[in-house]
Amino acid sequence: MDVIKTLSKSIREFRIPAMKSPVFVVLESLMETIIPFVTAKLINEIKAGCGMDVITKYGLVLIVLAMLSLSLGVMAGNASATAATGFSRNLRKDIFYRIQDFSFENIDRFQTSSLVTRMTTDIQNVQLAFMMLIRIGFRAPVMLIFSFTTAFIMGGRMAWIFVAVIPILAIGLFSVIRMVMPLFRAVFKKYDALNDSVQENVTGMRVVKSFVREEYEKEKFDRAATDVQKDFTKAERILAINNPLMQFCLYVVMIFVLSYGSYTIITTRGADLDVGQFSALLTYSFQILISLMMLSMIFVMVTLAAESSERIAEVLREESTLRSPADPVMSVQDGSIDFDNVSFKYSKTAEKYVLSDIDLHIKSGETIGVIGGTGSSKSSFIQLIPRLYDVTEGTVRVGGVDVKAYDLKTLRDQVSVVLQKNVLFSGTIKENLRWGNPKATDEEIIEACKLAQADEFVERFPNKYDTLITQGGTNVSGGQKQRLCIARSLLKKPKVLILDDSTSAVDTKTDALIRKGFKEFIPETTKIIIAQRVSSVQDADRILILDGGKIQDIGTHEELLGRNETYQDLYYSQNKVTGEQATDAANKGGEN
Image 1 (tube, rainbow, N blue to C red):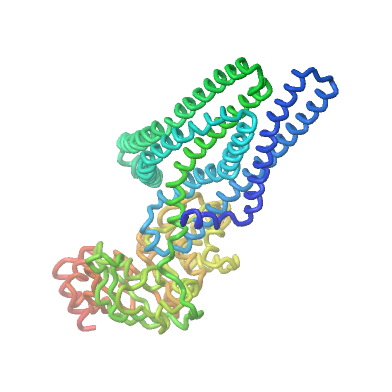
Image 2: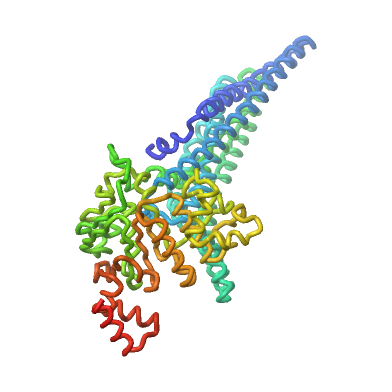
């Protein structure tokens, strides 16, 4: 019921078509049930020797009933199709919007491939089940009730055969659902893994081809696909029991009606059952058993959609772990940043902290370099500033205010992050850059690109800023992509600019020009630069060395070069400085 309640919220404006369909279906079923009754009356009239006027009257009634049934069937089909497709559209929209509001912590709980499966395959299953429920789901039981009632009126005690087969069907269907539900639950998880394999392969296609690993990837995909196929086959084999079970009940009923009905007509000479009643009873037999077959189809589809519904509802029920407070601060005064005894871990159940005892105070407009080895938690450190994650212990303040007190949009508009994995979206260069500021003028776009050293290569494109970027930015180089992403962030005119190793793909000369531009044109913006190259941070006001999630040291380039072995090793290895030169450089650093 919780799942139904969650999903039903997405029907919204399609509620009226969803309610119209059952009404039309009930009326259509009523027409179809009346037709055999009228036909039986006509047969009896013909048997009694009626004239053409009576036959014509009954014929016209049957034509009207058939036309009404056809019209109601068409209207029911249109209403159910409109409601089901609209419902699935709203579901996709609601899931997509929900994902947009997720924090990184929420995203970490779901695999990307799993979210894609839920928005495609799972919603398709739910759409088909919903369409069947609001049309066939009403038609089958209504037809069953109408046909049962009329069959008892026409056939008397002989109609009890229909009641006799229901327990057989009920036991069979209940057994099937108990066996098949765990299989579907497992198969959808494997479906996620299969989609994950496809996504990983397509994303890393260049790496696959570079290492000539196509055959390995094919074999890996084949194993995953075969695994899914085996589980689906097992589930479908169990569901396939429905059809022979229905056929068995159909033939049992038909044999009984034909044999016992014929025997009754002959022995009683039409006193207990006449030819018209027998004809109607046969028709109702087919209608009842067809209704049961429809119920079986619905059962199969709903069984398949039940797990899909739970997976969709799981996303819709997921609440973002990061929310704006009830009375948020709507402006950021300056770019000052304070870490007060901050510790952080990604999960509450995790034993080890990613960051521990971070105590740091950055003035507005200051440039801070951050270096450290792989796994030193540099990215985790900067993700706490725009509140992509919440601290576990301590407080992070921007502009003198706890980040938890800000409206999230306000904070993130003023703390611009160029992440390590640069992403461009399909569209023109202008459209991509306006992600930073939708109202940015062409002049502002060009200025930001000049500052990010992107203008020089954009101007070489035939269509310049109207050049189309393919999905994922595959038609520009890594360095060009990084510079465009930096320009996009600059258009936000933030008070804090964070570069998470965002110049790793550009040459040292371009890197230096970018840093020079920052210093000259955005002096009031606080700049935090994470880098692997010492040359990218050596001009910073202070350089922070992270090691194992803790601050190992902090100081200027000269200070660290004179006292910190980690920094010395990194600097000397990158600049190929000899031991004697190292000592001189350190002494000079100390004198300065």
